[in-house]
Image 1 (cartoon, one colour):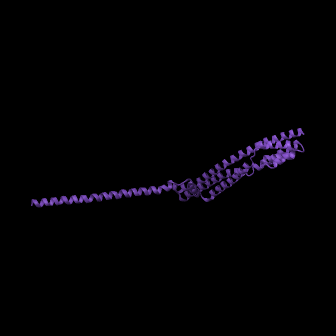
Image 2: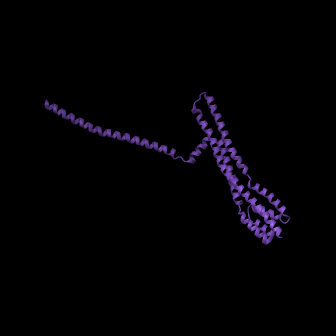
Image 3: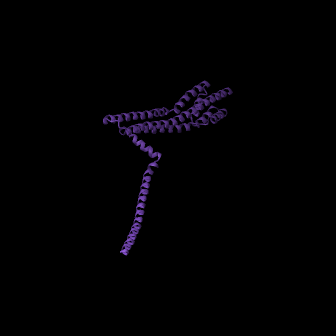
Amino acid sequence: MKKLFSILAIAAMVFVGTTNMQAAPANALSTSLSTASAVSATVTAQEAEAPAAEKGFHQELKQRFIEGGPGFMGIVLLCLILGLAIAIERIIYLNLSTTNTAKLAASVEEALQSGGVAAAKEVCRDTKGPVASIYYQGLDRAEESVDAAEKAVVAYGGVQMGQLEKNVSWISLFIALAPMLGFMGTVIGMIQAFDKIQAAGDMNPSLVAGGIKVALLTTVFGLIVAIILQIFYNYIVAKIDSIVNNMEDASITLIDMLVAYKNKK
C-alpha cells in the first residue's frame, strides 16, 4: 500500500512538472504575440501620422484654399495674379528706363562742344531712357532759345513721368480690393453660420465651427495678397522716385549746358 502511494505521488509530481513546462512556453509565446501586436499597432499609427506631419507648406496652402471655397478665394487669387503681372511689367520697364545720367550728360556736353546741337541730338537718339528723351526734346528747341528749351524739358518731363507711373494705380487698387473681398467673404460666412444655428435651434459649436473657419480663411488670404502686392508697390514707387530725381537733376544740367553753349557762340 505504501509503495502504491509512493508511486502515485511520484507520478503526480512528474505530471505537474510536465504541465508547468508546457505552460511556460505557451505563456511566453502568448506574451511575445501580445508584444508584437502592440509594436505593430504603434508602428502602424506612426506611419499613419507621418504623412500628416510631413505635409508641406504648399499642400497646406492648397488645402486651406480649397476649404475657403472657389467663390471669394478665386477672386482674391485673380487680384494677386493681375497685381503681380502689372508689378513685374513695371519693374522690367523701370529697370530698362534707368540710365547713367552722369555719363549721358558728359557725352552730350562733349558732342555739343565738338559738333553742335545736331551731334548732341544724335547722342540722345542712340540712348534709351526718359532722360535721353528729355535731352532730345530740349536740344530740339535749343535753336530757338534757352527758355523754349526749358519749357520743352518741363513739358516732356511730365509726359515721361506719366509713362513711368502707368498702371501703378491698378496695383494700389488690388491692394485695397483683396482684403475687402476677404472681409466680405468672412461676413457672408458668418451669416451662413448663424443661419445654421437658427435652423437647428441649438447653439452647438460643431454646427458653426466649420463655417466660421472657412469664413476666416478668406480674410487671411486677402491679407496675404495685400501684403505681397504692397511690397512690390513700394519698390516700384521708390524706383519711380529715383528716376524722377535723376530726370530733374539732368534737366538742370542740360539747361546749364545750353546756356554755356549760347554764351560761347
